[in-house]
Length: 111
Length: 113
Image (cartoon, rainbow over all chains, first blue to last red; front, side, top):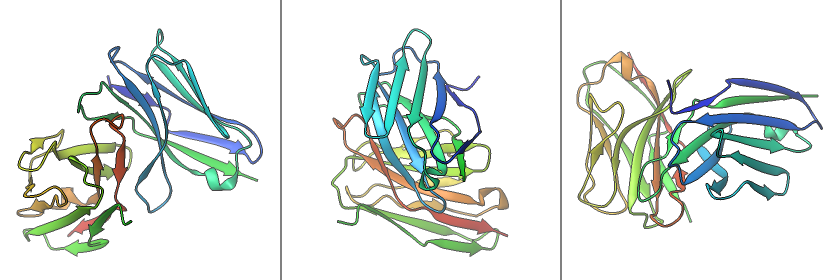
């Protein structure tokens, strides 16, 4: 199976919360990331979390990490149409190791 | 501050032709990467370089070559392009010690006919 798995699509109504989920297999992961890719653009780092943390909050974004289940989630509060994009989960074990990316979740925000 | 630039933005290429995709960063990052992005397959690593003068193979290196003569530039060459290399190519860079955070270029859309 893949090292990092995500569902491919998520559709939400504007103003609702979005939750994008990710599972990974490497228990030695040190950093876990969320990247955002808008249409026609490259990936942009949204946030990352160290593996010794359970939660990280940054304005409308909340990242939750369950190390036992190797599950990472990104919650976007008050989702706006500008949040429509592909969201990539990634993990790295650090020390110049190259991050492994999931296939991305397409978030569609409709009015 | 430009970050990472890629050139060209897009290109249509005849099969069998040689093509070099350019990537330049001005952040003095030691590590650089080339990915291809295909629908349904996500990002796949082609080649990487941890520091100037060294390169390594990623998940899908066949048909591609890279060089890293200096810190800033990391060109990707297709020696003899084939239609299966039609893709969007992203260059990225990162600095050791910054949680391996990668910074991506805007991408090059390549079509091989």
